[in-house]
Image (cartoon, rainbow, N blue to C red; front, side, top):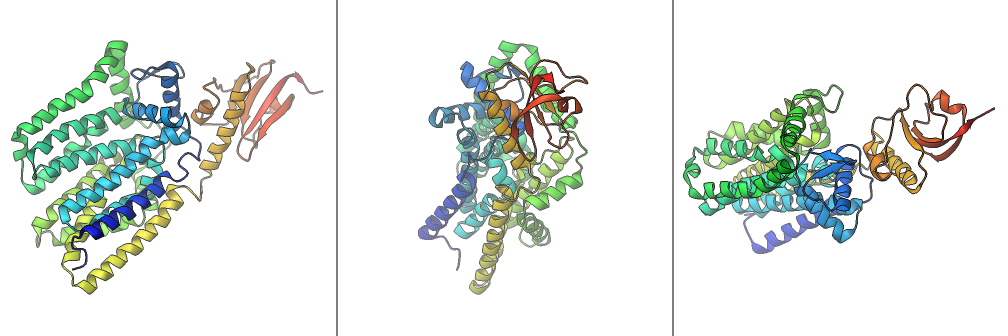
Amino acid sequence: MLGEYSPKLNRGLCIVLFLLSAFLLFFNLGKDAFIDYDEATYATVLRESILSENYITFSYLGEPWFDKPPLYFWLAGASVKLFGMNEFAERLPSAVAGLLLVILLYHTTLRLTKNPIAAFFAGAILTTNSSFIDAARQMRLDVPVTLCIVATIYCFLRRKDNARWLVGIGVAIGFGILMKSVIGFLAIPIICIISMFERDWSWLKQKWLWLGAVGFFLVVVPWHYASFSHFGPIFWQEYFGKHIMSRFNSNMLGGNITILDYVRNLFKLTEPWVLVFCGTLAWLILNFKKNKEALRLPLALSLSAIFIFCLFSMSRTKLFYYLMPLYPLWALAIGLSFNVYHRSLVEFEQKILVGFFAILTLVGLASGINFGWNVADTDYFRAFTEEEKKIGLLLDQNISTEKIYVHNHLYWETLRYYNGGRSLEVPSSGVPDEPFFIITDPRSVPTEIQKRMVTPMYTGKYLWLVNVESNFRN
């Protein structure tokens, strides 16, 4: 039967998946500028940490920074020491986490199904997901914490082979907490959903689980204790109260992002796999009573993905990257469902099914490159960011002490990073008599500036950098 396990087929498909993933995740990884908000902010925090040689308590523009735990910054710091302080080095931990996540997904599916074709498609569904590619190619914490979550689920599933794997649950959650705080706990409700479907809670009585809890505290406590000792109660107020609870309860991004916007983005940025997931979920529900034993796990994983979507839909800050943990869940659910359906077919029908999924993989690959690499740049965001980088580098090279003003510009973090962290200000109703720089939209140069002697330093499509002299035009 097509798909039966063979070492040669397994090795070949694993190599193909590895090369495909490496190409999608690492090709031109350092080409684009750091983008505004999270990526440029994290890059600034890392630079200050390296320059101050302080890897425990972080700062942003010289002020204490409590937004995120340290694990990604430790990994990126090691990468910078190897490859220098550049976009490639600082994004590398995220891309490596993405590659490891794909391989872990392949391995998990293979262990559960003994079907290399199902394992290949599970990995391919994730690696050709444009939203996954986009996040893994940025200096972001979403893909690394998702790796920790999936590693936790893997340890839980392996408990049936050996109860000692339960130790890994606590340790993996601990690393997830050090990567992106409470998001690391997302593995717990997923494990509970799986246990509900399996009707097996015996793992709670295993000593290895509680040894894992000890491992959790050994991983998590030292950094949190060191930060609390250094900053006192303000650490918990800022780290947990403001930067965790506020992100959930308030719209920190501005705008009016609705659940419908979330759904639209999901269909736009994860095609064709979101449609395949919807079809798989319908098939699982219709066939569950007929084959409960084989379909328990894929249905539990599917419902876990829906749970994650609903959870973050309730957040007022609906950043689309928050949905990252659901993608490996639906990829694994589709891979397991593919295996069950595949084995129910005769060989000719199996070839048709494999061919159909191969076509879907090619469609996903095209979509992944277009949107994941942002080749089209339909919103001109990448082009805009590149102009920010050019302006920032020009300012960094200028040793003068003039003030730098920003007019009609919402995003400052990329400019700040590339100009070496120099202060940026919004001009008041009047402008000073002394010389200064101003960054402005070329279509709306302030009237006050037009009356002054100006020297354009950079004139782009989206942004201008102008050096304003002290004397007025006649």
